[in-house]
Length: 146
Image (cartoon, rainbow, N blue to C red; front, side, top):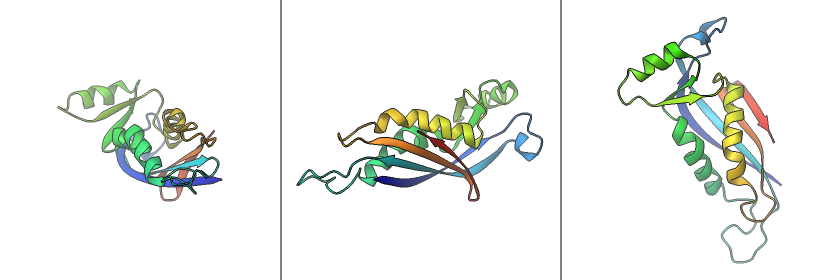
């Protein structure tokens, strides 16, 4: 069985050396979809009975590990020194330093890496993170697959 839930957040980024507008500082309303697979829990008299995992638990884990960290932050590539220096000059600015250029593809991969261990077999029902889909716009997204 597969289940999917969605969370949204706002963040800024830039793609250094991009051939068009994305080389400039800008932001998006991102959406993050998390797809898990697992057996349906059949243990009687439990809150999760009949579920792979309670959607509120799926969301709580992703919110704490990814969304709260990235929301209303500027995601900056660790080697984008001009932007890093600028952001560091702003008092109390929420900056997240990325090991890779923060494209939708790299953000989806990073979210997958962060979340994979947090969902692994949580309930003894073979729970597994299958996919993280990151929407950069309503019509453009990247999928990181497990």
